[in-house]
Length: 619
Image (cartoon, rainbow, N blue to C red):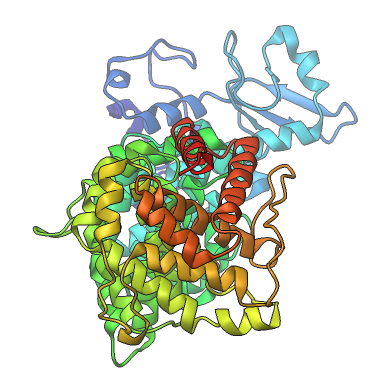
């Protein structure tokens, strides 16, 4: 609180100009810094009673008001220093948001009191004992410190504007803060002084329905915060949740003038929004999902990625992302696509990518997602299976629908990895039949036969989907004899392509291996070879992508016939010479490759070792 002495001289022409937007706000202008202190107070008085109840930003303002000013003299002596004395030309009255010029704010030094550590990059102080040392400082150091104070001044000034119950003032103030946070150096200063959580806390209480521009500004600022802070603070996902809850229309809108500034800020190279299509840089859900996805799948900082995964789980982020997907899923069956349909499909895809990244190699998140209910009668896992079935019923399509299918399959693989509950749900909701139908479509309608005949099948298009389907079945099969028995009993649903339907898992995988091994030539195919070089990445253009599918199919075949000698004999008859020797070789090479790269968990390595020993034994 401000004492009466602080405002007794209301004749100051700059006092009301700096405080026009918030009654009782403390001005940080140079003119205010030169005002006399209240009676009984000195520049370094101990905390008073009003300080004990002041907000953090007010305390920071009080600290800045006690700064020392370093200015450059015109004399050849260079820098001159004077404690607690500001030498600035008066600035004109500014409105919200406003900026002081660099020249006016330069040379302010943070923490320049006796016995107080400097918070700036230089330890310049101006007490009589070390004035000579301060004078030896460079102009660059002084200007850098002055820039920091100016940034803090502008940030605190705009932070006061956020608390005014006026959407236009809030938008203008938040735009000013976005201008500051768009520069990494300024963002670091705001982070150092604890302003970012204060801004998030204030914005988390807003209602965005009346001002779409304010919602987009808040989403872009949250993206800047997401890139700068780790681990996320306690209230990080409050603003994230509020924006997604109030974005049911999922449509970009706002005042044209403000959107021009937002487009420029979102296009900055260091911003996560710059990786978005230009049409989505003014879409609040897109800004949030893109920023959070980049954080949880950050391969350069595994600790930060894990912290954000935990924050997403512990602060309720999973639930709101699932509800966002539920709002967008209708676009999959839209018979008259429009721009809004494309936007909904993109939001659905980015939500699935976020789930895929958040559940990868994180059993806690996978368990949380596996138990999640998206409706009163449907779990997230069963809902994803229905989505894959819907997409498969439309045939093989490219574009966003194909991307959604790939991500949905990847999420299902993550949720069933070493998870008994996940595998039980997959068996109970008809996932096996859906996956078998999709494998059949990919094999027969995806150009496999034509590509094998030419010996140059391009795996770029359907490699991820095919490997994902096989990996999902492997996750179920390696859980034990009971799961393998249920898997063998499952048949394809025959709802998609009756002419292509198979009778079950065994017949499907045998047909796939026959096509991969025996369709290109009459003579026996060459042995499967998988490179064991350190950490190769199987991409669409990398050699051995075909062998990757052979590896997954061989592992699945091995688990299916592992406990049944009659099925093993049937498989050897179908594959003819050399029978199971080629799948066994593929499993051995896969075990060697993944063990060497450290990509296998101990449980999975033990399962593959036991499978290999069982197949190598005489039936």
